[in-house]
Length: 219
Image (cartoon, rainbow, N blue to C red; front, side, top):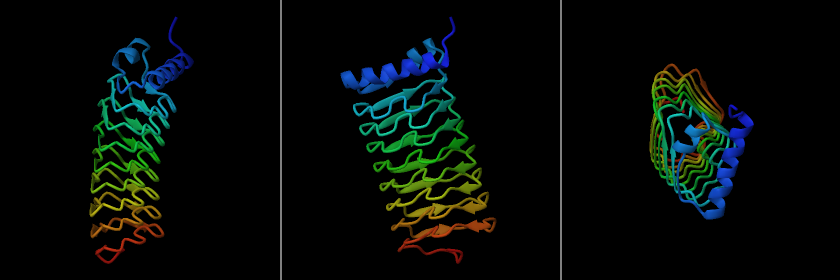
């Protein structure tokens, strides 16, 4: 019989329980996901798997769902295959030890709170196919020093980079038309931001308490 969606969810939750019971550190999902034909990492599938340090997401996966790796506080390395198109709401929220994340070019959507509170994350490269950076997507990434926003992005969400206190420079591409409320608030180290002429909406407090900021007149 074909594996149902309920079966796939159960497999993932049983795997999560196994990880927690035996303090598994490295996880390669390729074999088990291929066997059960799993293309979506289920909601909260590996929520709070505190022992995990490394995860390899296989080529069969197209979506990382809501809260999939929420609060995996020891996770330092995630390899995301170029089959993934969506990183869901809170997918990696509070992964305190995550230092770098390579988001493949296949990704078109970064959900709200996707990387909120990843306080060890230092660098993010957002791929060319992403059109919107979700609300709070990188809020509280207090070690983030650099972010590359591609010219496919048209909207930067509310609180998207709130309290990224180590961020020094942001280049907002010409494609962006809207910057959400408090998008860069409390980015205390931000010294330079260039806002393109095509931006028609800058939300309230977008650059609030950016004490070091020197802008181009629109801030």
